[in-house]
Length: 158
Image (tube, rainbow, N blue to C red; front, side, top):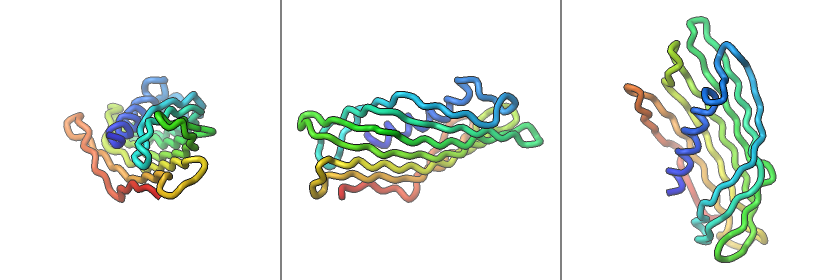
């Protein structure tokens, strides 16, 4: 279930540049900081967590001579904490995503590559209460339909 939520976030990030008006002819780099809220569960403790803090995203758009373009994105959380339910325990969340997306001359996506890291630290630290997640995802679009492929995927309690 966590991976499906991450996939939704990453697909949303792929759509954000167009939704906010970033086009290859209008800008090369933009930065945004925004409130970050989520409520996933911690598989190490089974707590449902309520994240609160900020996320910062940087978009860099490069146009190729043929009119195709690519977007580089970096997202990281800033000062995100969480309270667990039902325990009431506190967590610190560190998350980062780097993504490169390729678009053809008609602005249709053709390929993207994403590297994602998530670390949830239970405070105070107790054995097996920290959660670490990492994956690489390469997506190609076939007939307008995204085909994700995951590699180097791991999730563990530490």
